[in-house]
Image 1 (cartoon, rainbow, N blue to C red):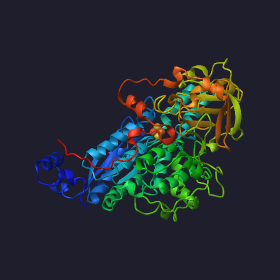
Image 2: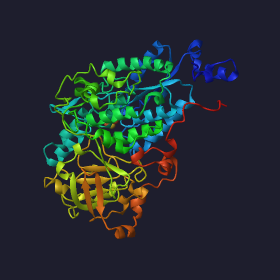
Image 3: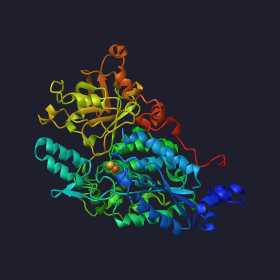
Image 4: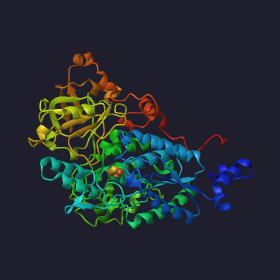
Amino acid sequence: MELRSAHWYAGEHRNAYIHRAWMRRGVPGDAFTGRPQIAIANTASDFTPCNAHLTEVAASVKNGIYEAGGIPLELPVVSLGETNVRPTAMLWRNMAAMACEEMLRANPIDAVVLLGGCDKTIPALLMAAASVDLPAVVVPGGPMLTGTFRGAPLGCGTDVWRLSEEVRAGTLSQEQFSRSESAMIRSRGHCNTMGTASTMALVAEALGTVVPGVAGTPAPDSRLLEAAHGSGRLVVDMLAADRRPSTFLTKASFHNAIVALAAIGGSTNAVVHLLAIAGRLGVELTIDDFDRIGSHVPVLVDLQPAGRFLMEDFHRAGGLLAVLREVQDLLDPTALTVTGTPLVDYLSDAPIWDPEVIRTRSAPLVAEGGIAVLRGNLAPGGALIKPAAASPHLLQHRGPAVVFDSIEDFHARIDDPDLAVTADSVLVLRGCGPKGYPGMPEVSNMPLPKKLLEQGIRDMVRVCDGRMSGTAYGTVILHVTPEAAANGPLALVRTGDMVVLDVAARRIDVEVSEEDWARRTPNDATVTGFANPRRGWERLYIDHVQQADTGADLDFLIGSSGWKVSRESH
Ligand code: FES
């Protein structure tokens, strides 16, 4: 097979000389004669603490590539640290994906190993790999170890909210709270709850893009380096077999990813990421597939935020393969993995070692997990709710809307003692969609009004065109499509309108007469929000981003351009 990199390196002409000479730097000449050039797309960055260790992981990948006869070359790519990047990391996911795709295509690369961890990094890398369609394998950076504070385990993310609530309640001093800060991040690695990073690593494995059994290996565990080494060897085999994303990622792969997402009780963020990856591959995946395939799958994993344990426990208990074995009858047996072997072939020897952490099918944490897709006059394009995370008594509800035009408006008024809000109210937050914020931040699980918290109210119906953190919980209707800033009906709702939620019927509606509705116009703040950039990525993003129901990708990035570059370098 002729290597793609040969288009740069092969031959005696001047251009080939230039390509080789600048890359020699101590590398022997036979490096350029028929040996695969393998990129290691590395999202390590000091600004992405969850991924900072990936350069050590890359070293193990390199050893594996060398052993298999390839030439490893590190390719630093845009990295997104969830806790640092403003205004929200999701604004930059498509930019990271586009930059990685273009650099994979622009350089003499035959195949790639993708190193990610923090929330947006694995989705961005997979979107890029799908579009450039070179053989690619993901090595997830892995979760951090379990930290403890005052003798109890700390779930990062989830326990920040718990401890800060304890301070508000007077059961934890400010000094103790500050002291917990250095205990929150026990080790290298990403968040250790079943948040978005853990979810996306596991879903990437269920999709077939990670060597089965690797996702969820804690970042400091030496088995991660062993897996990285093995993935380096594997990618050279993948190249020889011409095993590119388009050759094995099918609707069946996404079916299995959706089953896994439900069974692990994973983050709703996986919906936009999987839709975006499918869009790059030309796989016809819709939000309704998440409801159809996933909503009757039991949740088997007892991890924070839904449950008790953390990712270190999950790995010890058997990891994803043990979960999938329990729901094997729901999986599509035809879906292949990076190894060329079907995912289901890895499940025969995948015991549950701790049934407290990974439940058996006969004793699930929640009988029916997954994500329900709602439609109605408030969300004609669809909206999501995670019923297992909601309060059962609120799954059917009718209450007056209390509307906020932006997250800033929300913060300014939510704790106002004079705000007309009761436990029956429906909190509506708009201006938080892909265009409106811009970037679709994780704000949909808005905190409850203080005066209701003091009355013991712990959940209310909330409706928003944004996303929510994978560590969040509550009766939250999110990803409302079209968003307010795209002239969705959400822009026209007024405080006092009656909102009707019926999850069993998959409906979310507002009771307003057609005549009244037709007379309404959105106010400027509702439609434009804070999105008024004049230049740069934000300008490009707002002009081209699609809605959440198709993955919030840019319209001109849908699909694959493949790896070909039509012109030589000049
Ligand atoms: Fe990086 Fe949570 S902040 S995974």
